[in-house]
Image 1 (cartoon, rainbow, N blue to C red):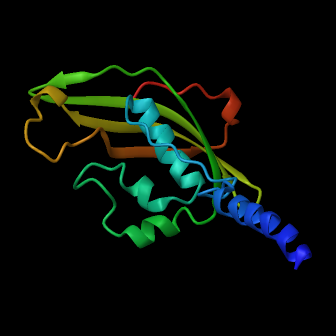
Image 2: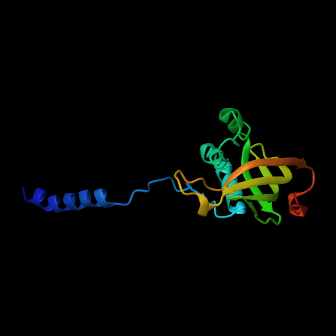
Image 3: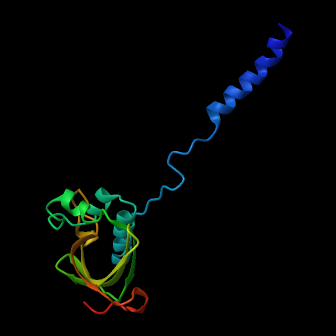
Length: 164
């Protein structure tokens, strides 16, 4: 009986530790990025999502009506993509009639799951309705309207994204 009394506080302490010990909500390697503050951050977020196989998130960066028609086929097109690195050329907003557009020059290095790398150059067309003119919900954030990319054999580190 005395031994049991001595063990009871230890058991209670162990139970409290188990109940209050921090448990990670996500795995240690889980990461998330979703930034639409600039056209560059939008495209970085898009490729971050693709690199992490968050295809639904990446697909959500397209403007309404601009996303590829078949999500499954689009996602399968990225199934052999490991990580994507992107760099940008200069861009400036082109406002007009409550709309803002950007033509964003890019160079992209896509590391494939088989160890090879593909390099692309081209342009993203980005759109946002003027936030001051969006008076009714739902709010429409900045999004991708289109992308025109061509594969190149040049090394990624030698490419400077050109004008669109």
